[in-house]
Image 1 (tube, rainbow over the protein chains, first blue to last red):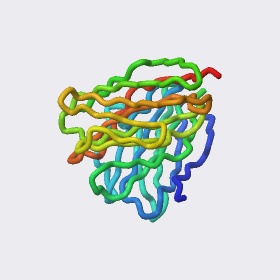
Image 2: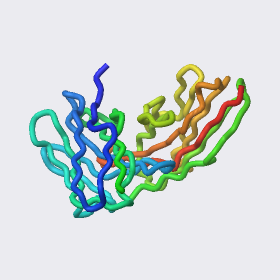
Image 3: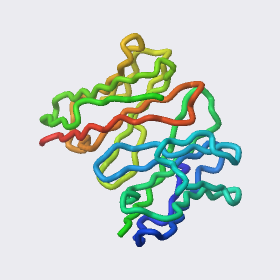
Image 4: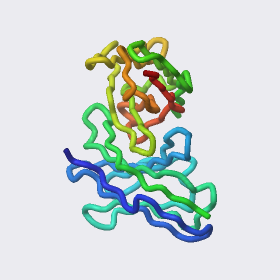
Length: 115
Length: 113
């Protein structure tokens, strides 16, 4: 079964450092997403990406965040200057081109710990 | 934007009993309602979904009902087993605004043997 893969599984960084989280969506999917889940809380939408540009972003996705699809397979989330409150699990997800419903497949997540 | 409310936040049942989790949504344009199961430390996994053109869908011990008029939908798990213990999230998204999916706050289900 096709999977969304994410690296690293866990990253520890110092406050103020830049972090890049990587994702390889399912190969025939065209919509890509990043979600965040702070420990014990709900899954929160960050950003969606389609056709090499951001489709929609939430209020969480401020100027410290950026996404990129540098090649045909990777989809990255960059946090420019991490804050303590950025500590969370970050899930990448992808879906096929819209055909009536937004069926998301999630990756296993990247746990970010900011010290 | 869409706002999804989920209740209860925790639910404890005896093995074999049924469990019901309820969600409401605010955006009448939403028409796709998935349910995700998240085991501790793992990714959310889709367990069942429903589209607005049906009122009920069933898959073995799991069923979901949708009331579009009242803007609420529910997950029903019958004959619960200890392995059903997890956090369950409901979500909603729209057909013409499918770029973001809003999740409920989650329900921690514990099935006691």
